[in-house]
Amino acid sequence: MSLGGVDLNLLLALDALLGERNVTRAAERMSVGQPAMSASLARLRKHFGDPLLVREGRTLVPTPLALSLVPLVREAVTAAEAVFGRPRGFDPLADRRTFTIMASDYVTLILLRPLVARLAQEAPLQRVNVVPVLSDFAEQLHAGRVDLLVLPTELAGSRFTFPHRHLFNDRYVLVTDPDNDAVGSALTAQEFSRLPYVAYSGGPLPSIADAQLDSLGIPRKVEMSTQSFVVVPFLVSGTPFVSLVHERLARHVAGQTRLRILEAPVPLRPISEALFWSPRHTDDPAYAWLREQIAELAAEL
Picture (cartoon, helix red, strand yellow):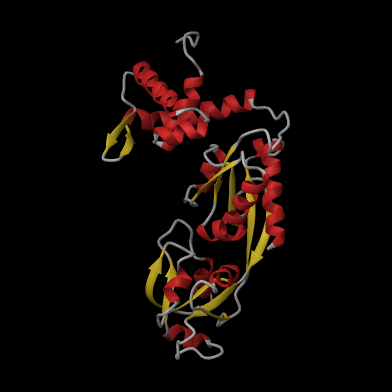
């Protein structure tokens, strides 16, 4: 089929609609009004002879045809960006960009919240979308569905060959309620194993702390598990539970909840958080600028 009669701007609209599955958010992503995005959706429906997105309750759900188009559209947009999106300089005070960063809730709180606060003051035109880390994080980065990924190098592995930059290290500490009489000034591994434990489990990322405990043969009495790193200290507060959390996280929330921080019952290796990106973004001034902002904030930690 000839593309002569096709408005290629519809490709970008289709990519935004399939990615956001919400007309308002798709319009914001493309910096257009909602009526314009609704009109684009109507044209796309007419072109494909398919509703593409159908309403179920309060949400829009893609049709089977729309789902089949997702990888094709993403690949086409990525190719178009490679052809027409060659870097021509970037002014954060004049150019509007939207960046998607994949990161855990722990990194979001410790590092990306300060980033958003800085951008609100120094570069208010820039928008940051933060999405949780998925098990297919490598494919998400490769396909361009995320622009940057913050991940411990311990989870990335040697075969994860994307360009990257070290951000900061963190270590694990034990946390408990200040009134937990079962915990003294320190815990042995045997005492630790007998106490009720809050574990991080069920999420797409394995617990690096628990993996190390497993390798040392230290059992846990798991009484509760959660898919959120950030919520663990709040589950410990006011309960007989103990847990192992990132020290930066523990100290960040210590003033917001009752928490006592102790050394881990056994020495554990620290983690190394790194920033990863696609090679095609290495020389892009906008992405280079954002990487520098993140690196500067990480250095201030």
